[in-house]
Image (tube, rainbow, N blue to C red; front, top):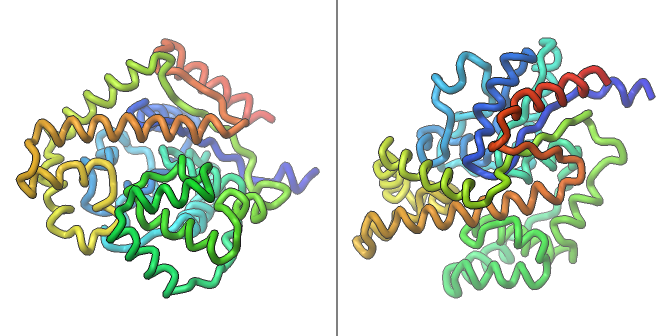
Length: 314
């Protein structure tokens, strides 16, 4: 029992995009001596700030933020890399007597970290990976994603068809081991998670409100210079492999190729972001321990503070 009680406490703040996770995490950090650990798979990259909705310094309000803006856009970064780095941050923040606030919309990062997933070394098969990558190029990303859906529908729901890297890895894992991603994760989770966690998830009761918030965010991103950032990714798309597949950038490639208007590309981005938000909702709703908070509620911050006080007193 003592060992269980000695586990570090972590508060996770997840949910779909455009629900105010950053603002809530900063407010909670100020009240509970917290430090924010990024849990967004694109906000780790330097120079990609507008399209990833990376919080600028003024929004951080002096609260320490970790695992933001530290990798060059051409460098791959796996879930295993993230779990190892975030675990180190939790250890250091806890040692300072502060509260780790794990904040972001990449559910795979959050659940893998909090469950203590151990990433075993499945021997890579370069020939198999090359074949799958060639199939993606010749048949298209959507066709490869449909292959994944046939063998691992749960993971296919969580990964975008354009995220070819993750689709290829999942198919490679299945062909080499016969295991799906979820089966592998369950098998690699320890009986006792490494942290005592409170998982808060933000969303809107009214789905149309969420979509309105997404549309306003896209409009603001364009006003802030998203097009210039997207052009940088487009010009470096061979090197920036992950960024070139990310929502917020690839939707503007047809504009730079002069096959669609800017208005058409902006509409595509709004639609793609709505679909991404639906996938995020699906992921977080599968987490049985999540406590849902609603942006429409005037007492959202008060309720979150009450939940954290009770959690810290346990």
